[in-house]
Image (cartoon, rainbow, N blue to C red):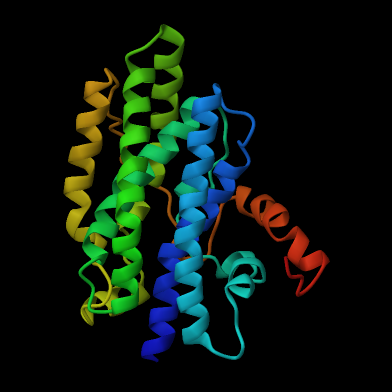
Length: 251
């Protein structure tokens, strides 16, 4: 039972990185400038690297000759535990940055604490990824400020993105039964403990960017328990195409 809980706990972390990496990968060659295009692609690759480490560990726990590829490509939609935020579409550049920023602040706080997990593998993955995630947060935060305090159009698009994406932030701190069990054992992180700190940091950056902090109290959730938006099926159709068309293919 412990291994089963740990396996599913890993998915709640790794699936976020996989789906967000896939979203960023869709932008390769479509950035507003070459430098920004390459930066977003590199962030995507960072997230995929972290995902591989998580899935390799998860495959080991699952056994049955399971591999990282099986976990990434051969699950059905309801088996993915990513939050709704990361599966939102690349509506425009401001939207991409808003989604990235709102996730990055959370991701950094999570990884920072996960470094101290008594599970040596999880702690090692977190320690290896902390510098990457720190850069991601700095990159997206800087862009939020540039767009928010930029032109009239960039400010509007950035504000619209934050207003729309805000409803997905509360789910980041929703604790599933698996997360509660792992936190109780001291292996996982009780993400609810840094919810207040998260909103304080996000709000500080938004104010610095001359943007308005949303006040809506309605939030969407479900992704962590396998209930996704209409976007998820399309993401998986593209993500899983090669593996399902050519089963067991090897590069």
